[in-house]
Length: 417
Image (cartoon, rainbow, N blue to C red; front, side, top):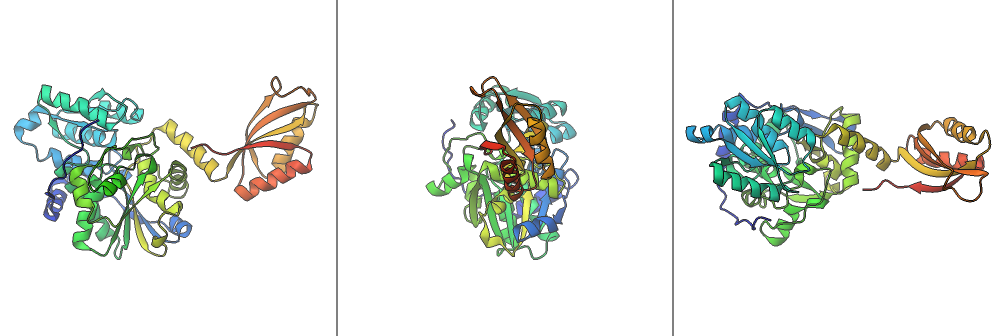
């Protein structure tokens, strides 16, 4: 793992964010920041969503990438750039590199989402897979910098990246008059640093709240230590936030401007992805769902009744992962239940089970018989069921109905993290 960084002096100013906004204006969208009556009713706050997943490559990372590329010298443009990234920074560099005619190499961890790897290649970037995390990918990138004289652009700690990210904050202040709090995902810290710098300069009373996954809480570790320190990054749905060491520059900026940082667990992230898909009709990756997850998990009770913006920073989630996350979210929400029941193996036993489920208004998703290993009593059979219900109370009604029919439920499964 790379050595711990030295904390630099703060060298990103509010004027740099204003300049970045002018510089990237022709290449990056001003994304909507829309009020959500459904999320407001669900959370007890007045919720607005900053739709950064509507950028061309699906994340806010385009702002910093475009800003950094436009400041390269002619010689640096010719030689090309490189970055270590799990996906979104890589995508942003690939897109804007292609648009500006700048060669781009991205080093991605071996297990980076396949959809992001494929899209980078489609955009013309050279993709190098190396390591299990960003720190190991960075080591390989540093080797290529030395051997090929490429320009390294850090996805969360480069000054131009932080300034570009700060343009999100400028837009929010203009789009949501009277905003009282902004909830921001935290990985390497570039977004929360730039946004906090912009917002606190214009509206110092606005509360800035960071959210990071409990499985990779590098910002919290930096706060505890007083400087960035490496942490063990475990697998998380918020893969875009799985940075094992927060950026030193970003931390130096954010630590005096971010009011609170909380962590969220995997179940809350999965449930938030589901809520955003159902209620907002938005496909959002785990990193983008983290702000809502913090509120739904009860981590931010002080925001009740406040005018709050959630920064939905990205939407690049693998379709197969998305389908699994939706099912897991339904299970966490109590709307998919899995249980084993014992029924008669005589004709009509399975029909009675299915009929009882139907009369309760539930829907069978899957049924599996287990005869061979079901036990010595051959007159009964164990059946594994996955059933869709309205909510947890409805599930209890179903179990009571099964019991009244003499159908014994012998086990219930809880969704695993």
